Image (cartoon, rainbow, N blue to C red):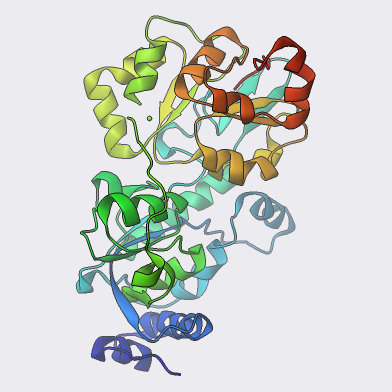
Length: 363
């Protein structure tokens, strides 16, 4: 059954608002048919991924790098970038911006961050300069098309906040949790394919968590503030030599942390705080081998562990345990769920000593 389209949506599909919008509407209509949607929803927010826009994507050396760095969405932009006067659908009231990627642009060459670091005795990692250049080219092209320079995976926290009942499309997984629950707006964990097309049309087929019948709550989650707590825990301490302490946040919170002194506490201790990027966007398979990464992000453990380098161990723990690991160089659980987040073989090897284990080399 064909979807019911509004007058504007039909005009975009017919090409009356330019080639780019027609191209994107064609894709969304196909998707709508695949999910049995009967209509489109108008969007108030779209969060897209920043593409790596290479001028020589078929060059063998460049292609090898793209296979390591690209998440698969960059080439989707090529036909849109080739269309003259392509622009996002901000005239509809939809606000579009971009997700972070693998580097903070103004500190791209600085050491000690996820994109450029060394672990003594283990090795080092540095993001490729060509990929940084082509990522900046893709970012600049998005700005030319009307995307806002968020470089954040959570603009709905403090930059563009959807109202209750509004619809959003985000390629960031946390959006599905936060927007649907805390804000009461409606979104799915959208694919980075759909969000490309949503940005230029301002609409999306109605499906999934857009629908009333799929929105019943099943659990309660308590949230604490992820930067001030770390600053409090690490203040007056020193990160152990050979260990990296990384604190990731969004751009507004980054400057708030500077203003309130949290950045100073973290950096005085030897840690690094950064924004514009997400650790999950770095190619973990190229990190040094046989390292241990501890994190308070279940997303990183769930999504990134499979992309790690050889011998990488991931530990999910609370901030107190993470800061203690950074300061001492060993990991000691401080909560019961810290213990149960360990690989089974590690738990079994240490059960003779009780439920506490230590894992050296925490990053």
